[in-house]
View (spheres, rainbow, N blue to C red):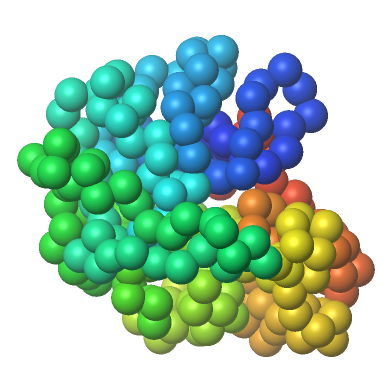
Length: 257
């Protein structure tokens, strides 16, 4: 069984802290894992409030080299002294921030993290299996990777921003894992515009087509999305694939047998 607890997301419906970022706590086959750490250390406070022990995490995955996913790493290292962080080598690069603000600083991971915590990073490139049933799969964006977990229903795929395209990523995984289906896709789809979460970065028909391809042609039964998807895109996807598109919120718990 795979149990995913959303430690940080852009929105929350309860007393937990939210911020622009994403962090998921995974429980799988009796072991604890972490995917991303949000922008700050706020995910640690949420883990405490939810009774989740970050010191017990055996390994952490950095989905890609942006600071809204790696900014909380110092807080994680303070709580956990042993877990490796699995990232692609290009996560060390500097990347432009996709925003209308010309003064915005770069979006890459703070270079000081790799110097200060160099022994905590595993930067070998994939694809690779990091534990029985857990696979890291690189995609067409040089610093990005998916975490694919085997369940009885099929693969549960987590890709925090899907810069390469959510449908492209799923199609690639179906080729890499013949005979498997992608039961669920969890993460952001980078459909937001440059003017914030209320803006749309793609034409409406493109978003609608993406939703229908994921849930139709590619056979994804559940799509759990938020973060960089944006509110307008989420609404379009929900309308295109009713009953299959679910919004991620801080504190949500997803369970896959």
